[in-house]
Length: 271
Ligand SMILES: [Zn+2]
Image (tube, rainbow, N blue to C red; front, top):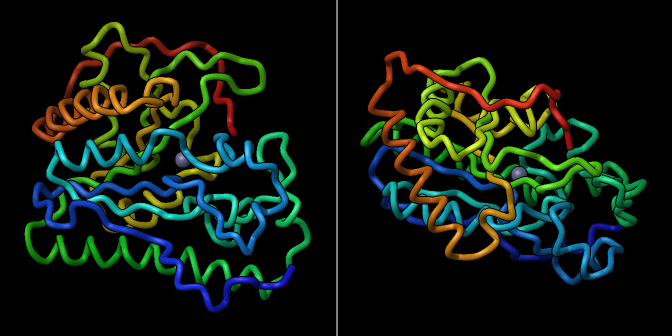
């Protein structure tokens, strides 16, 4: 496939609430389902761009509400993950997916190195440079207390209902995730997934690894089931819940917090 947007000025990244000074920094890599006209929806019917394969439904609205409540800047993507997934290592096979779930992505099939490099330079490099720049700026001024990446997941995956309303994902640095999980589990109505429905070993933790763990920042990925945040009202309710839990978690750093569990016995359902 030819690179069709070499002259495009379509910015791949935006920052919301840049002046936030709480020390918390948010990212949202799957915020948008936008694909420029020249890419002809990558060969997909329009309704496929409304699905989770194209973006994290409700995640941007949730992240914006959290940014406002936490007084935190938010760096978010303005293009669909189907063009290039910003939360994957750019060398990984699923950085530019030829299939997503069971759906083939026709115009991603068999693309050459030139197009791969173009998408990386156009989308990946500026997004992560923007996160780096913001973190540098904040670290040099007010300091950074936490980096959180905001996502959503589908209620059903491979015919199985996912029980968690929210999942907290972490890998080596678990300082923040353990406290955040404990804070959320204070609400006994919630089923909180620990490294569910995804885990770092599924290759989905790239952005937090790159910007959080490498800098030694308390960090985690938050996944909310998308039926919980499909409306503005749901986004606001979840933003308030997550902001309160995060404040509690940060207040407890460092320190032990007792946890309870509602984990189902099944393993991770990667997707
Ligand atoms: Zn996501």
